[in-house]
Length: 248
Image (cartoon, rainbow, N blue to C red):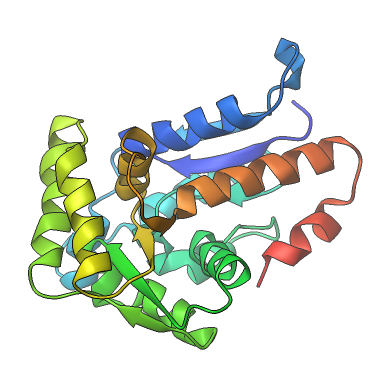
């Protein structure tokens, strides 16, 4: 297969399915051959990311991802994409395993925020406890001179319930709970823009977009970037030149 990219997924599987669905439905097609070429590694056995980040006595998920990346690198994809925010805890270590470009989901999302909302000085962040605990998005946001609002103590239990109890355990999106989280971040904590720092939250946005709030959806953004890169590379442009603008 010529000109394909590798997706390191399965964290979780339903969220990865959402990413694949986005790239399949957003690419413009007139025939089967217009779809993108990709290999999906849906590694559902990767240990829980948040559990390890918060407690290093829990199973380390790095070696599972290392094996996935090294295995795919042997096939020489044009680039890697990993539709899981919390797994970017090991982004630098994974990217060092190969010379193949590895898109940084969080960084691309934060730069999208800067480009589309240049006058906003802060952004609301809802994410897994692991991402927040290790400042994964917070550091990227501070690096571009913006502040982060996490909301009060009532926010994280609602976010955790939506991610783990509803989506991961039951495979359903609680529309009302998702909208309540966004409304609380906007009305009570003054967040004009809210960043969805977990791909399960991106799935919630896909399934329940009928709300008036501005969100930055990293999974939606990385899906668009994946399509743009894949099509430009297929058209004969140099992969490194095309990808360089996304390698912040």
